Length: 267
Image (cartoon, rainbow, N blue to C red; front, side):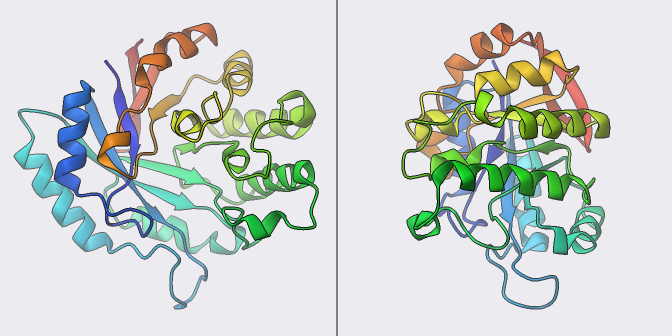
């Protein structure tokens, strides 16, 4: 089967999921292992309140207890999903180096400090211009960050646009997406196939098959898999689609990180 390496629990502000229930759901879904990646999205490099407060000592203590509890049933790894913003370029690497993470996802959830999750963000703006602004913000993040292993859900923005992905295509943003992919490959970073896109009704993963294929064509080899589940019932969401998607894009392996090192498994 596959590993689900993008999962959220009650340690993320946008989830109430119990860790044990998430693990049991994953086991029932038949996955080979899981990695929890709760949110760390900071609004300030100082002491201002965090958008997604994450109690890292408690997080590690609890997850390590579940590693022991499930050691004979399902491997459990400990990761984090960092909300990348350029003003955090000194703080986030310090946080990452202070804890023994297995896996670090770098993601863009905000655009210049604003949240596209809320419909108000798109008011009086051209939808495709917002999408381009989002992709350009990823390039800005890549210019200052190296403290992550893969970039999460590269076209996350289309989940929340007024028309979602109705008018979105790789071709319309090929210039900036190509630069993102080349930069990631040059840095030795991967991307993920995030099945949350199916959950959100896009009919495609995040990022789309075209982006996954182009990443592989350019020489990218590191591809992780995650459902971005915030509830037990969304664990391993539509994972039955994953092998065919990845093989059609040229991949023969997928990636699981342990102690920040990639391990490759055949599809």
